[in-house]
Image 1 (cartoon, rainbow, N blue to C red):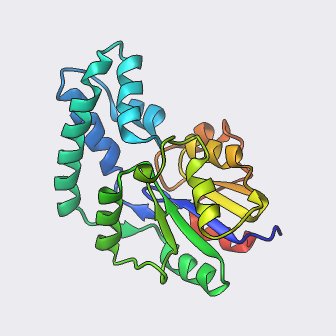
Image 2: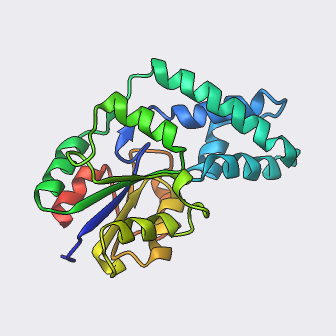
Length: 222
């Protein structure tokens, strides 16, 4: 199998089970502004996107007023903070073991997400995942100027660990945007997982190298 040195893993739906609370909250925040959108629609449109951009895109599709986006985003961020405080966040089955095994093989693990650093850190604190034990770096929407599927987050991850060949990078995620990000970076392996926002037929559109039930199944590929 390919010599993978760096794993870039999405957070919610890929390594972390937060019961789609992000997209449920985003749905509520948009509907609070007098729109009518379903959770399924939000999942198919917004999965994996930076959240302000996701809201703007959704408003476009709904023929809404895109100028509402910043206010809705603020409402969403406030609601999400509250939701997360009360939420029982857990790792997706087998993930913690998988991370520790990959670390034991001296592979670098970067968690990447379309969230802000504050929200991502809140999730990690709840899981009690520690830098240098479970992962090596966290890269969020706050760290880059271009959001996914632009490969900027992956390039930043490579730079952090002096990895110059994208073939040595695995990118995994639960949305089409994750896979597009991996392909745009030239990653050696792109893996879609069924544990999150999008289903097999949606994920197949992005043509990942593999579609797995959960990220821990990638162990046999490595």
